[in-house]
Figure 1 (tube, rainbow, N blue to C red):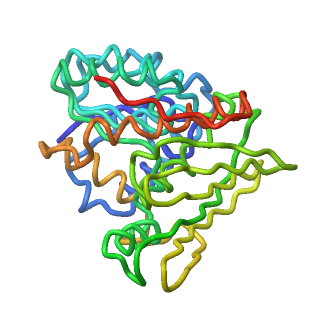
Figure 2 (cartoon, rainbow, N blue to C red):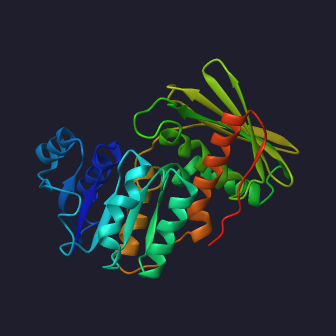
Length: 294
């Protein structure tokens, strides 16, 4: 049995992971959550009452007592802080979106993880969505011809107390990167009403992202030479369509000794792209995506 702690459980993802373990006990039979922690203790109490999990006094309380940690804090500024006390032990980690809010801290985090042999996964669960993955497959296979571009719509909460722009932005960014490639060259943003439009420039096409303030609908579209399709992105049920199941299963696999599925550069890419978008919002200019230097 692998003992795990969930840190930063004010995020709904902590609830979703615990619920997934409950709904699929055979698929996660070797994992035991021994405690949860949040700066917002009322959220811990909700999980204790619903799932019977213990509440940790501090985010360091499980050091030396667990085989893995799941970090789901809403504010990415807490992620490296929560991870750091556990890194020397080399235990596998899941780190939610945004991995961190800053490029510098993201690089420092993964260097620390890799120096201690920590296997890790995380980011936005939207990269596991079946619609997103189908569009990715169609792009790679040139279904209906070569890709000419696309569009992704997702929410934004620029005034979130959990890191402002960086709280929701990773979802749209992760969808774009998963569908169209992890390395756009630059971004340009335009503000109009409640929407912020982003043009992601790739070598062979442009992709449009539309952030809508506090509007929680997701859509994705791929435009090809001979056709175009748009789909609404919704959380499905079952192993094939439930993002949270897929995310937890990926972490469970590395917890049980498997290798992570993403390269370090792909893991870091959403942080670098999100920061380029924020720079463009602030400057009103096209901004290059900084190269990832490890």
